[in-house]
Structure formats: structure tokens, C-alpha cells
Length: 309
Ligand code: NCD
Image (cartoon, rainbow, N blue to C red; front, side):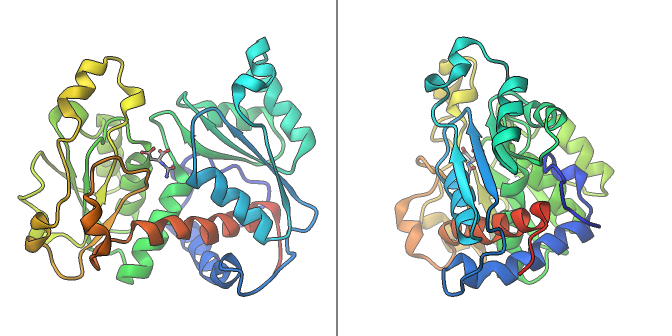
């Protein structure tokens, strides 16, 4: 399939073969992502960033990716300094960016915003997170990281822990990992468990996820521990957040039970879910994971913009 001109809105829009194609290209992008090799494959192309929510890694790795490919990026900047405060709609803003650039990267607090934006733009729209919905490009870099670390995702045991309700990264990742044959366990307090919608989709794809509330019960069995931040900004009531904040924290001690090659991943930013002492252990892969955002997003930009090496 040609990806040229395709929107990247939900991981559901992609087959396993298509995901493999993206990850294979990401592999080839690594020397360019590191700056060891130079390319002008996307010379003249402009990427625009439209971020209505905070971001460090996603926005900057997209900007790095287009720069490393010889293109340029435009950042709309803080929404409060744009015509959005004058009442401009998302649809009109998107129409402007469509006129000014070749690809639009959008992060928005509302679920479904990227799908809506894609409808208003002939140019490809990439979903960089829509509320508690999906985060497909994070999922691709998470899969890339697991593939690199584990070789194959078939049958690997992955536990997702933390805020599975509001954490969008785990929604798209749970579905994608099921397509690749991973066995999933969802660990969260009952109030933050994986949404029924995602569990249903995982089951439809043939998965049999386990639902638990204690990490200790599964630690010794895991190949991957995927830790998430409690999404404070999405709690309607701060008192509810206080009840669950700090509930899961991965400490050195708990890792004594883990397999020696078990890896810990986290989309970042972390608050206090992983003790900094864990960073120096061979389990910690979250900073490698963050770097992987560059080659994976380079591959995506090459595909949607039709670049050639
Ligand atoms: C995540 C997000 O924005 O969903 N961050 C990211 O993109 N790496 C996770 C989070 O904010 O907790």
C-alpha cells in the first residue's frame, strides 16, 4: 500500500503488515536520526505543529524528524497567543495550516479532534494525541522499541500499569500489541482500569487480557513492564486524583523478582512512577524509547510525504 497522503489518526487504521513496513523503514532511519548520515529526502517540505496540550517529546521529535530529512517545521505556538482566543474554530485553523504546510501534526484535548481535522484537510493530519483517545505515533515507537529489545512480540508478556483509563498511549498500544500476539495484563486501581471499549477491541482481535490491581502478582512473569503517569489533568475532581496519586511506584526492591531481561518502558513524562534509582539498571529502556520517536516519526513522514532516500 502507498501511505502517501494518508492521515495517521488511529492505530486501528493499520494492519500488522503496514505497521511492519513503517517499523522496517524506521530501522533504516536510525543513522539519519543520529546525524551519522545526512539526507535531503524531504527538502522543501514543511511540517506544521498544532499543539493544544503540553508536549516535549512528541513535538520536538517531529521537529527533529523533519529537520533531519531536510524539511522544515512551523509551530503554531501557544494557543493563547493565536486567533484561537479570538474564537477561530479548529476547522478554520486547520484550513490555514493546510495552506501553509505539507503535513499537520495535531495534539488536542478532545477525543476525535484529529479525525475531525483530517476531514477538513487535504494534506495528511497526524494525531499526536487526542484527549484520552489514541496516540498512534507513540504506539509505533513503543512497538519499535519492543521489537528491537525482544526481537519478536509474539507471546511476550506485557503488563501495563498506572492510569489505564485516561492514558491514551495504552489504548492504542493494547490494540496494536494484541495484533502482534502479545499477552496483556492491565494493572490499575478499579477506578483507573482500561476502558471497556479498549478491552472489547482487544478481545475482538483475539486477546485475552488479564485485569489485576497488584503489580507484585505478575512481576516475575513479565517481559515488558509499561508504566504510565496518572493523568492528573484529565481528572474532573482533584480529590479523586489525590486518592490514586503515587499508588504505583516502581522501586529497585520490587525488581528483585523480575526476569533479568525484563524491560521497563514509559512514554514519559514521569512524575514519581519510577524511582530514579531504576534508571541505572539494565531494565530501564524509557530513554531509548524516547529517542526511538525520531526514527519512527522520520519513517512516517517519509511515507506520508512520499520521500525517497
Ligand atoms: C504521553 C501523552 O501525551 O499521552 N506523552 C507522550 O506523548 N510521550 C504520556 C503522558 O502525558 O503521560
